[in-house]
Image (cartoon, rainbow, N blue to C red; front, side, top):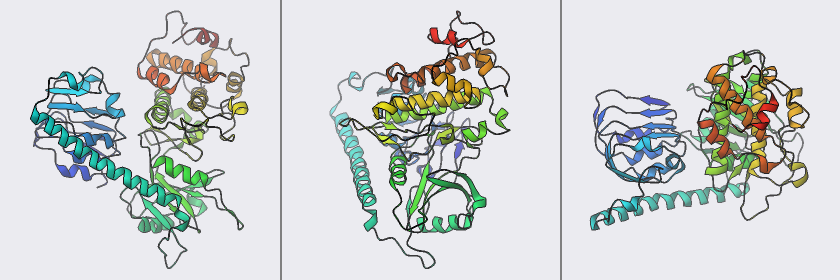
Length: 491
């Protein structure tokens, strides 16, 4: 039940895909059964794998429609069903809309939202049987959607009125409450976390900030968790719970492979904490400041930039309404053992209301805040773009130093050589890696433009990062490249 990855590809398995695969709710990285001899329809139960990032069913003999319930798999970044016998519409979700046509080729009659596939209405006039089937599919698809929205409405209403909520009483503690998001049982996990951290002993603390302290909790089952315990006032009084509420409301609505996963939370007069997936290497900022920063080579650093860009692209362009993080910093980007990056700390995130001016009090981390916030106090997605640019420059330079401050303050740096400001703990990049570094640096410089309208959107940034481009021949090699060269050439 704790499998995170399942690869059964390149065998000679026959029969249908077992329905019980849908019970592997912790499956996160990959489910791959490609290059087998599987038949039958794709089970709708796969939609329960909401954490899954990569689904590969290609090179089999699967038939029928792609289940519309696959739209619930919000973490999907790749889905390959090519070389099967599938027909009908492709589910309408961000993962499918962004997918290349190659992932759907060599089927019978797939159609729909994927660029390169024909629109469904061009495949011929539907027969009476087809219309009947489609009517049933629509009804089947609507029912779970209505149920989900009703449950979500009930949850939000209950959460907003939680002060009136009567939570279970434990004999040894005050009242406590916990909400289960994955397969955890609230009361059991509460007790396990208290035991694993010896009631939040300082020796388990792995980080602290103004809002709360983070603890490493290894449960008796071997499960590793990160637990953020919210700072409560030392004296009687009210604690600002808005960041606590915001983080819960935001992270229970979104799921992406590059956004830290919220497993659950606890609120009570005694303590309040949030439970996340554990990221082994901690924050990007701490890694850059450590003696092991050289392990973070150029390939890993470029990969981190792409991870953060994907997360912000998802928040800005695939969420309705768009979500602005407002505190994108190197300390709020967490790394796992393989240097995969996840954006964390959504305590001051904002949902952009299209019917509002989205004014706000100044909040965030000094040095990463977009300059226009000082005089407009208006939150836009371009505020995150600026912070992304600062983090990217910090990542390439290895620190938040004087050169970076000069770039952000528009002080003259045009005559500086690029190689002289790159992190000197690493060798100067070469070949294709050097080309990518130049492209990323150019994007970062445009992202920290003082004028928000001159910055690229995260969609434009993400699109450029998806394709490795060779810099124009007019640019000198990275050994002779100056910042002035990057300011004048569009990459």
